[in-house]
Structures are given as C-alpha cells and as structure tokens.
Amino acid sequence: MKNTNSQPPQYPIRQLYLLCLFFTLLIAIQPIYAQQTTALGTAKVWGSVYGIQIEGVVQGPSAQVSPLQVACVFEYTENDIFNSPPALPAALNGLVHLDHDIKGLLTDLRKSGRFSGHSNETLLLTPPKGTIGGKMLLLIGLGDRNKFSPEQMTVVGSVAMREALRLGVNSFAFASDLKDAGIDSPTALVATNVVKGALTAYRTQSWLKEKKMSDFKPLAKIILLAGPSFFTVAGEGIQAAIDELKN
Image 1 (cartoon, rainbow, N blue to C red):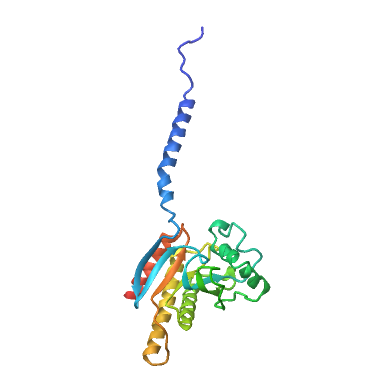
Image 2: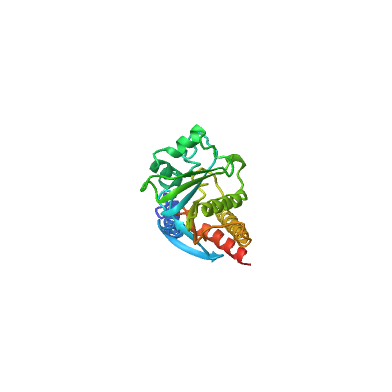
C-alpha cells in the first residue's frame, strides 16, 4: 500500500533559500562597489609642502585645464593603448582620449619613432588653443614596459618638476597613464614616488636659488590626475609622500 503522507523533496526549498541569500548579498555589496569609484571632476588638496599644494583630481590628461599637462608613455608597441585588456577600456583611457583630441598625433609620434619614449626622454608640444585643457603638453618616456618598476616614477616626477620650472609655469598637471598603457601598477606607491621626486627636485632647485645658481618662478600647485576607480588610493599615496617629506 502506498504511503499518501510522504513529504515532498526538500531540495527545491533549499535552492530557493540559496537564491534569496545570493540576491541579498548582491544588494548588500553594491554600496561597497559604488564607493570604489569617484565622480569625474572631483578634486581634493591633500596638503602642501614647500608652499606647493598637492591636489588630486579625477580627470584625464586631455580635459584637465592647466598651464602644463604632463603625460607619460612607454616605448611604442603596436596598438598598446588601444588593446583592452590589458589597457583600460577606451571610455576610461586617458591616453586614448588625448590621442583623439590631438588628431592621432600621439600615436604618430610614437609609431614613427619621432618620439621613442625612452626612459626620461621628453618632448614638449604646444597644441592650438582649445585642442586640450593644457596650454602645453609635456611627454615623458617610461622606456621598456617590460622593465617598468614603480621606483622609476621618482625620477619621472623630478623630470616633470624641472621642466615645469624651466618653462616658468605656476602649476602643472601630471598623469602617469600606467594603467591606460596596460600596466597593473601599484597606484599608491606610484603617486608617492611622483610626489617625492617632484618635491625633492624643487627643494634642490630652491637650494641652488639661495646660492644664486638658479632662478625660477615659484610653483604653487601640482595636480595629480587619477581615474574614477583610483582616486582614493592615489590620495593615500600622495598623503604618504607629504607626511614623509614633512618629517
């Protein structure tokens, strides 16, 4: 005789429970992911050293308004800034936007060898007014991407500072553009090294000025650019550099 009181299988209830749990966790973690991005245009002055404000801004090198925009590029490899991944997607890629706004000149310079991008090599451009936010554009080479280390950004920061002083600007914006180029670099450490390199170079030039061996217009501000996902962690690196230099 059949047992008419047999219970239905329990696994559908278990599956329903797991499904509800999944959606509950998904809703719960959404604010966490939202906090990882910062709105375009957000700016914060993290502190000042030697009378120079260090500001972080969520912006790309093509749009940031400044007397001098610094952008960093590696030695050219075919479509390096356009291949995503590892490069950032075009919508978030500052180098892609910069190349577009200067009519492909960045790619032409690199691909033709007119600007090789060797380590610490520089090239100054003066784009027509309205082309990009910066009045002048300084390219700094990073060399072979396969040999990159965060420590070299200290020297890059010093190169940027010395060029800014030579050009007589009162501020400059700096974009490392490492992730745009497909390098998974430690954002905070890179920001720390750029700031330390730039301000150490400024300190040296100030010492030379006291000895009447240098003359330059004082700098008021350095602007470090970061993408929406990297603003907070870059700020931590900037703050670390400021704290170290003040001690």
